[in-house]
Image (tube, rainbow, N blue to C red):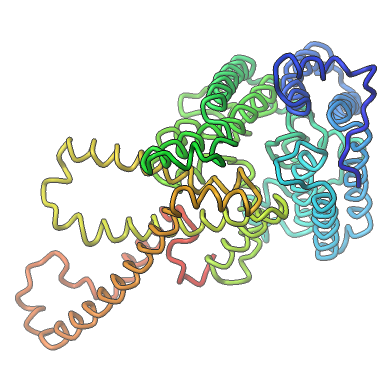
Length: 523
């Protein structure tokens, strides 16, 4: 598996010239041009192809334009994606009646092929090679096999998500190629099931209006974020954080710079996703039902929740608003499929472990996902302590406006600064580089997390001990308490089936993190 891209320099040397003039890597320029190509493709499709009643013409259009753009970026290395798609097609027919073999064989082949590609191509930097779109394709092919397998099961045995994605009718090879190479999505996502592609081709979304306008808004936002990213890169380039100039800064300045740099690093991904999403909107592909005011919702393939991300105050908000479709894919095809383990924490750990392996072998990926797991867990613990042990003793202070503003500013600063720390391994990838950056900031994130976990251990120990003492006292005076206690908590220990059911449902509906309530034995 080669790491080089074999492209005819005589034909495409204009791309290199453009890259030289702009001062960006050629691979990055090709990627940006490919994302932008989704807009003229959408224009051609809406103007000339959409009205053609022969569906194979639609499939052929998307298969040719998508594979052509893939070749524009990766040359003959395009054969890797062709091998993957054709293998899924063959496995689908070989194991159509055996769901277990289909899922296991398909999963093993695609992950094995991707990891072998990583082994031969990975360097110490984030490389734009054929493995980048291939990791997107791997998720698409794995999810496709799950959907084919679900299509063989009785409808009432499937979850709601599985019912919406299950495939009862197998696609042709041309359909699968068009789905896999769908323009504006095969390079950087988003993920979507085959059923959405089939609904789009069957003209189920064509009657809804406003997609082009929404798509152009998304393109404008993408360009704005790209501009901010470029300015931020000039101010705080990645290499700066490996220099003595950064190491010699004051501590508070260093962690603040790290936080800003982390935001600028995220904007690289966000700008690509926004422009990709805009092209899909212009195609009319992203219909997601109607909004509350009756207008079409065109955000069915959104990969980032901008408002939630920019106003977020904790790491969990980043998890909920960043790379949304990939997270939904992992939740549907990995986390929920691990339900047989009967433990949320193990299922969540398995999902994060899959994500880390899917990204590659660099230690930075594993450290970043480990930090995400620990930080999200710590935030839930802090919220628990704050709600149970701090707020009850603060009186009217928590209701004052000045306290609300102070709390918001504090949390936002924490959100920016700590996110930069967690993202550092993901950007620098190799151990030698990300550990050097952590050394420059005195490993403050690890120290803070370790201190908190020690505090929380003693807090829980003390709280449990006090609860036992309180329960013993209540048992001693139980009869008197029942007769005289005017507290609204009286009778709280009584067994009430209805109230317990409501409480349980509410807990399940509001628990936003699978790491919280880790002692539960049910997914």
